[in-house]
Length: 78
Image (cartoon, rainbow, N blue to C red; front, side):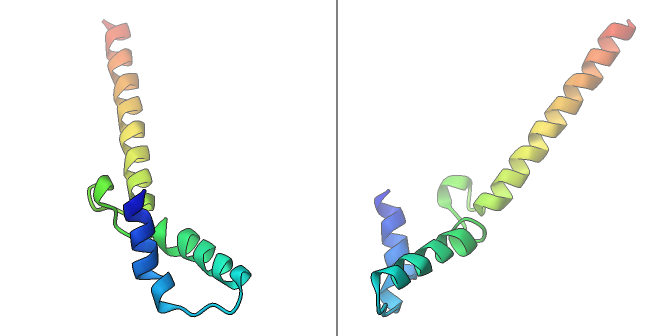
């Protein structure tokens, strides 16, 4: 969690001058929704973006499911 806040401050907050708390909140929410969750590479995700990681995980689950179906069909045919 500390590394998240460190990244947020280093990549966003320290480079901006906000006029109001609301402006800061909106900018940080935009940063999280657009950049941090979609494009930023995360070391805990093997240097993939969360979006790419989720996509890869879904593809792996679908491949495993199809593999199970295929295996089941082969077993029932014997």
